[in-house]
Length: 231
Image (cartoon, rainbow, N blue to C red; front, side):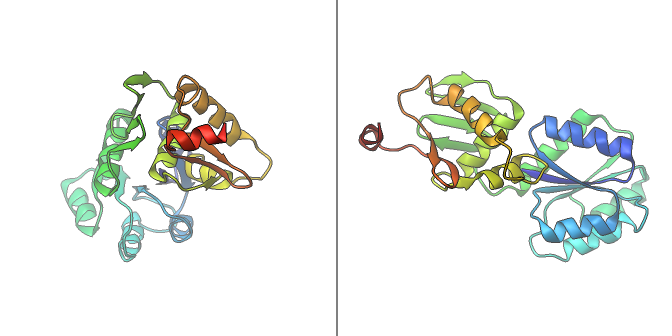
């Protein structure tokens, strides 16, 4: 899932981006309102964390422009303005939640996850064959066996499972899971796919992650006969 952090204070922005990336999210950052609006028009975000006090425009103006778009993402306001009137105005303008500074990151992360659950129409649990992924508790099991995944491994697996049977290019995976553009040279996706396979495929006879030559990867649960034919 991709989150946009709109925050002009470098220290706070770095803290937020590191924390959210560590939790497995892809994060873009905008230091002003103009950049934020350009990014919102150029990409699809699952959530926006929005500071109100920006150098070029008031955060509420940005919020109004986001809400003028059809199907805009959930917005969590993060602001030093903690008065009741400020919170009410932010919520009435269209914010989905409001958190005042200073804040504890664990609380912010809990609110982020709650908003993502609310705005995510897809199931909280994903299933491919005997592989199960709990999006809320961030747990993975296969045939009843718990599988521990690093945040980026979880992010790739969730993206694959949400697109079951659909080939995903390396570019798509990088841009969805990492906060970077794919340069055509990195083998980072292949490395993480190997890690995933060693955990969710290698210990089992039935292989779920498949390589699509010339494109990338997909996940599916082929019929046993079809899998045997490929071996």
